[in-house]
Image (cartoon, rainbow, N blue to C red; front, side, top):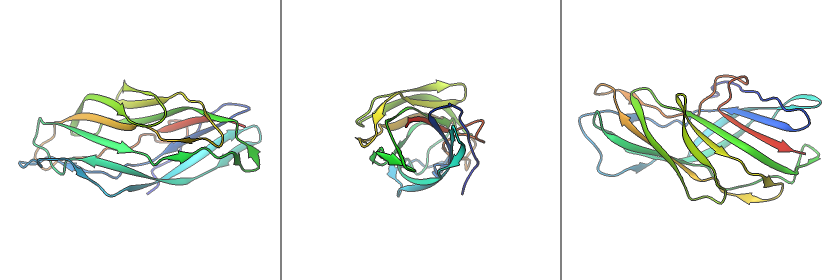
Length: 191
């Protein structure tokens, strides 16, 4: 399900902005699972638009995230939701243009309904970044740059939440964004 669109604006560079849903649900119940359960990879269709000197360019793509969360949690219980993007390679060429580098990756994950933010961290990966609460979003910033043709692995994002809904309520983490003006994922590519 394509949840919306996003847009960035940088002249002379391509700015990508993306919106998507993680497709993961954690019900609050009277039973708690002893260990986290791994979900099958969640395929997220991304609506993307690049702002270029010749105008906006669509560049939609799908990314499969591996997610881990408990199957159920008690009310007022601390739990962790983790998401890992697949390893990738920055293309050396895109649409006939040579890719110099990609930088300034930003991902926004709204704190889900029926939960409160308790903390976050990044683990693993071959590129470093920061994570923290900005407004009502868990924000991941990876400054880069990553050169065209280079391989990379983003770190796993671990978000600690405390369940706060009534029994049976659902907690549905997702990547944020509602439009190209309010993106959930952004990056800048230099061509």
